Length: 570
Image (cartoon, rainbow, N blue to C red):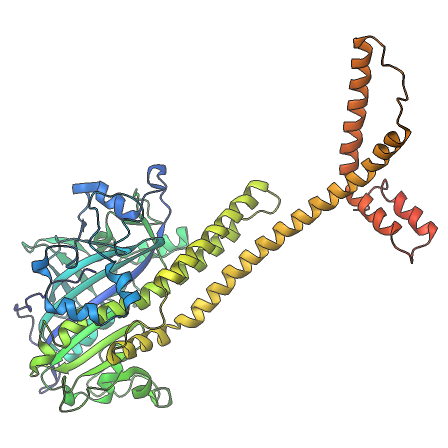
């Protein structure tokens, strides 16, 4: 499993922290976005049987993404103690999912599943984006965030890709950090103000290269472009800066050509992780923690709780993990906040362990905590993907069309097989025995509703499979009934001729041409009689049922016989 190297903490100063004098200051801020997307079938027949990572490999220099070799299969000099701590945090079956089972990887292997020792993940990283410059609201000073890494995660047998973007910066006010958490990770604007400014998202986002050159910028203020796209495609338009980041992958509704296409599968707000190293976390109020945990953005200076008191009555129990929220211990004054969509850790900048990049909370945040967050959202995205595929299979079904029925059966069987592989390879209830990792994993899974979602998708797929089995049995039973009727009525002639034991027509000594004519006549008549019996087999079956019914009189049985040739009785 690839984890980014311990990056040097950003040193470039941004605008001075805003807020009231003496307000808490975020000494170091990290934000990791995780955007789950569904991969759509390739329109290019050449890539139909290729894994998406193979398509990226084949693109070479035409793609900015490069496959990463993780610390477990690469040069052993890259393997550090933080990677060891990460590895031993998980249970063995999770380790096999994350890291594979050995060093048998063949770099030249282009098979769809790789070698047996591989992790069932492929990770690609782009290195051309060095920073991102954001403006929260019009009139605010820009803030430059260092891009620590930008990765794509692919998975065997699952048509899901996850974009992971991690950014960091020093010296922010708490309000600035809250605003970045709230506004940055949005795939497109939710609406617009009367003055035309986009709602709830950044006023401006610019990707910067290593030389400071602007590579791409946001277009959230272009209201008409988003409106016309939804009106035409019945699907949202991805903001230009996120579309640029994903290239050469393109939106499924985009007019741009692309062998790899994706479709949004979850809410347009991307799941987010955040690390806030505070000068004094004890100075944060309950309102501050509520806004961080629920990612509601910064409030006014005199703001109170963002929601009603009764709604937040059990806030600490539902959203806070306070094992280390004490003045002493391994990580003093450290608080974890989790609502499923977001996982936030707040701690003391003066604590050496909290800021340690090799063994401390920062290392855990970027390794163990990231992986448990990734697993939870990968599982949710996969289940939603299965649900979407079932709906699409049903939409294409036309029971009056034999090819459509066959295609539907193949699609459902394939979904059933993939779901079985997903269950045995990727579905876990427990990922670790370490108390902290296990507790945070349970909080993510509970808030995301993974177990009810899994049961629902499993039930739907099982219902589809049961329907196909029942339909197959019905067709087989109908065929057996028809063959039985044909055999029964054919038995009459067979027994009659066999019992007589004679030739009704003495043509044994006749010329060959006369015998051939009689053979053809008898063959044609027998064939016609057999086919006619099969055509009437359903009605003849009803007649046989009437004959075997002791409660039906002679006239009723004659009526059943008459219905064999009566029109409109089926």
